[in-house]
Image (cartoon, rainbow, N blue to C red; front, side):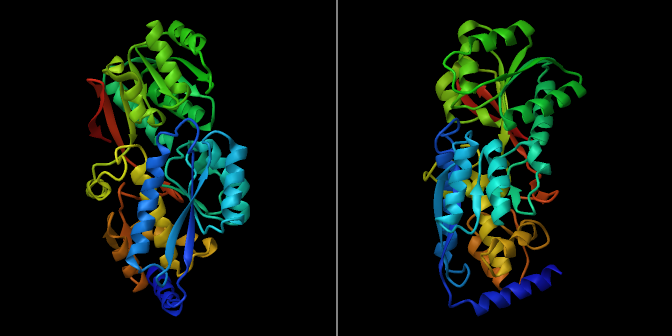
Amino acid sequence: MKKLLLATAATALVAGAAQAEEVKLGVILGFTGPIESLTPHMAAGAELAMEEVTASGKFMGGSSVTAVRADSTCVDAAAATAAAERLITAEGVKGIMGADCSGVTGAVLANVAVPNGMVMISPSATSPGLTSAEDNGLFFRTAPSDARQSAVMSQILMEGGVKSVAVTYTNNDYGKGMADAFKAEFEAAGGEVTIVAAHEDGKADYTAEVGALASAGGEVLVVAGYVDQGGAGIVRSALDTGAFDMFHFPDGMIGSNLTANFGADINGSTGQVPGTDSPGAATFAEMVGDKFDVTSPYTGESYDAAALLMLAMQAAGSTEPGDYAGKIEMVANAPGEKIYPGELAKGLEILAGGGDIDYVGATAVELINGGEASGSYRQIKIENGEQVTVGYR
């Protein structure tokens, strides 16, 4: 069946070869807000894939691909929804790379993508709640769910000899989903969670929150927050008051600003962020060079999300979301020739000829359970004020 579909797509491509056009893809990320130090690198990753495809001249009869950016804010669902609406109605995008944070991603999916039949591939929305969201087969993600991250986090802490933790989380879908999943995993492994407490972003003073966490106790403070917002405020207050000097950081806290802000004060602290040591990751880093910070979280996932959109269009012989949504998993998974970063032209050519591809990309892409990323994690430790990769899981 896969071969037949690809052969049909190839016929459509040949028939439309003379109809080259500009294809717009939306890039909706929190260019302002609590992860604004991460999103420029994420956008650059996605746009690198678009530039590669355009330069190949092999996409949809020589069509070009143009990125149209929009600001999700990461936290304001109404603003994200309005931005996504503009991408579709005013800009005429044919797919959306994004959104980023889980709450706004869910809002865009329910209020914009599903009603408009628009495909979304998020590189970083990790809430377990999105797994069961009503998406009509339109939503995919290249970062794994926090259900998996929570299991990895529990393993790291237990193997490090940590038996008790306090947990604080940013009061939104991402934070609560992470905190709930982690608590269940850590307690099932025999650990103690002394307290699970929400914090609000945007506050000037987190003394009260840290006081409650300190009163509950714990060897380590798990901060499921944002590196450019309340999570950083919690860490600063904990250090200033002496409440905690050892932390564990999920993905929302991993970024250059973590060590820029706290340096050696958080030596010995640990964390994890989606990442892989696959050959594709090394190739991607070589491709990027000094164009942007390839070590910043979700850059590879963003490249892969954009690549999957374009490869699926090529497989379908159409840029219409209703035509290519069903091809995303097909190009992402076996069987087929493996496609790595820098090989998008090769993938496009194979698809145009009716062949199969297995897109590996920068993050060893494998889609499961209707569009979920199976995913792996890069484990970090803060040593001498720097983030050091100590393994992959």
